[in-house]
Image 1 (cartoon, rainbow, N blue to C red):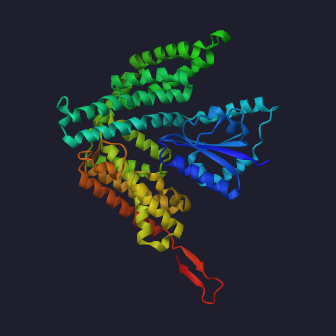
Image 2 (image 1 turned 180 degrees about the horizontal axis):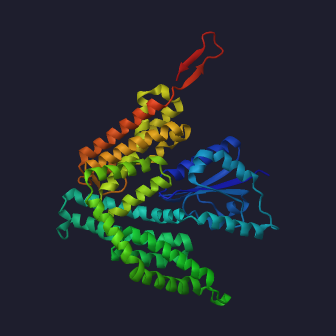
Image 3 (image 1 turned 45 degrees about the vertical axis):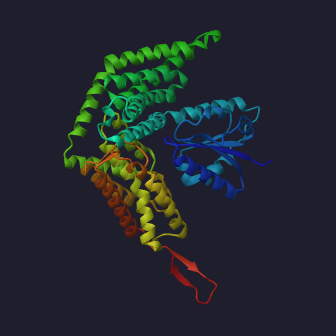
Amino acid sequence: MEKKILAVTACPTGIAHTYMAAEAIEKAAGEKGVDIKVETRGSVGVENELTETEIRDAHAIILAADTDAGESRFAGKAVVYASVGEAIKGAADLIDQALAKKATSAEDYVEQVQQAKKERSAQRKGPYKHLMNGVSAMIPLVVAGGIAIALSFMFGINAAEEEGSLAAALMQIGGSSAFALMVPILSGFIAYSIADKPGLAPGLVGGMLASSGGSGFLGGIAAGFLAGYVAKFFKDKIQLPKNLEGLKPILIIPVLATLVTGLLMIYVIGTPIESIMTGLENWLKGLNSGNAIFLGLILGAMMAFDMGGPVNKAAYAFATGLLASDLYAPMAAVMAAGMTPPLGLWLATLIRKNKFTKEERDAGKAAGVLGISFITEGAIPFAAADPFRVIPSLMVGSAVTGALSMLFGAGLKAPHGGVFVLAIPNAVTNLLPYALAILVGTIVTAIMVVSLKKTVESKVNTNSSNSNDVAS
């Protein structure tokens, strides 16, 4: 009987990695003649969802996810765990691992369930994954709120101060509502990632206390981890008779964990973190040109280092978290630096075609579109093919872009959108110098890439008498 493989892909932002991983898995399965179905859990929600019947009948599941992917559905099934980055670069190997898995039988079902729980527990241990679950839930609010705020500035910088105006309504939607929910949602879903549903209420409350208390996104992160591990402690330690177990997730754990989290945030944790956050804000607001350039260099290099991976996401989370504190310069540097890697590669494929294969030149066109849309992942195919030449080139170009953006004093009020956001009046401060920073970074990236990469050669008409090697 033919082995049926299922897969799920999910990344924190759900924009590019999710679908690139799905495409890589489907392509590898097609080349091996393996029947596969891939569920994607992206920014638009769950697509191509796996059914209970399909999960039951599947030989194995590939779980390529850096955030929550509903993995409890697969208890008792043979599961191959991977990151979306591993799926993009090594999909064929994941298919082989899945095919080699032992299928679940009635006799070993209980053992498989226990093993699956152990593997999921091992996957969940990393604080980074919990943090990214929180960031993933927060990003739609940041984007929606940021765009609403940017639209309000179309009517003038101070137009929102006029009560009853459309600008005031947009500011209320973006600033007073969406941005007000950012930190509680971040905190709540970090806690949810750690303790499941019992962690959500204490996490949300802890995040609200962090937001209202002035400790900002740093306090929200601390509250999320605190609430999650406190809720998990009560979940693991409190034992009740079976007829009372239902009270634990809806009454006992939320109440106890919320009280503990709230009291610790108010009396112990909140004030020190508020001081740290205030110091960070004051430092950022008082940056001289030299320090601003250095910060831009670091943020820019981080954006290009792994193109949507953990380092990239850390820089993005740092910048988006500061938006709630009305600090817009890091966000501008981060978005500009995230655009230049694919844009630079697109330009490189145009100016030195003999450095790239035909497939890479075709990919360069797509990279250009992704670049203007602020999807850094468009550079991944090039980096995977030639990492030691491409990645340093991307980092240099992005570092230059980030440094110039900070030097020019550019600020960005919307956390996503690429060049499409630049068209919104007043969404970007110092727009022309900001566009120049992106242009310069793109050119630097392209020059670095074509300088370091070797000329690609291919053989044409090898059976012909006049065959020779020509540069492709």
